[in-house]
Amino acid sequence: MERPPLLIVGLGIGREGWTIIKTYPNDWFFLRTPDGQRPRLSALAIQLKCDAFHYRVFQDTESLLVEANSNGKFRFDSTNKPSFSLIEVSERVRKAMLVKQYPEIIRKEVVFKTEYDKQKSRGEFDRELLVSMSEGLEDEAEQIDIALANTIDPFQYYWQTYDLYRQVYCNFQQLDNMNVKFLYFQPPNNYIRTLPSYHDQTEEEMRFR
Image 1 (cartoon, rainbow, N blue to C red):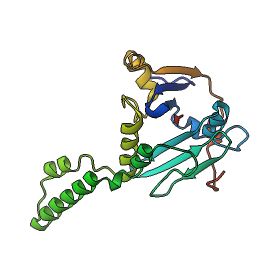
Image 2 (cartoon, rainbow, N blue to C red):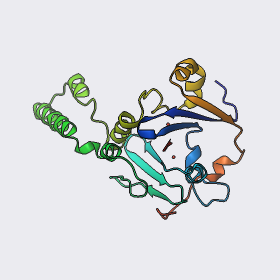
Image 3 (cartoon, rainbow, N blue to C red):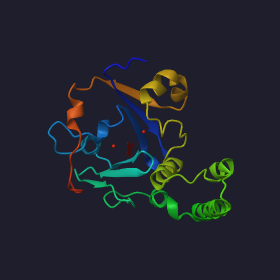
């Protein structure tokens, strides 16, 4: 499928007053504004007078949390234990960031490790059993993303969609039935040149309230 030079923005209603925003290209709100002063996420939060955050997972293991408020402040958190410290979020959202501490996750990891060690000591592995037992034990970054989806997105149909263009044109009717709205724009030819280069954490499927 040929991809035209098009910016697609999908808007969906989330829980707790959040609006879920997906873009194509995926990194649009993570890029800098033309003046290079802030990510587009921050610029939109200022314009809409709202709080916003973006949690992005890279290759299932690494992540980046970006927070932005209506006053123009924004914060990047790329640590192994990302947490909110700039914008106000509910206890349920904060709990989603601590999914690795859920008792049920801890129990599943203990059971999986016990079975893995037992098979290892025998010198043979039942891979089908191990794969089955490992379901729900994704890397922490991926688990946080799933927990956020469970907390905020009532449909979760396109939360983890990484090809919004194909999703829109192949499943438009289903998305329309979910009350997802789409906006289409012509992006600037040089938008890739605005990739971020922030070093100061005080100076991207986006979620807004």
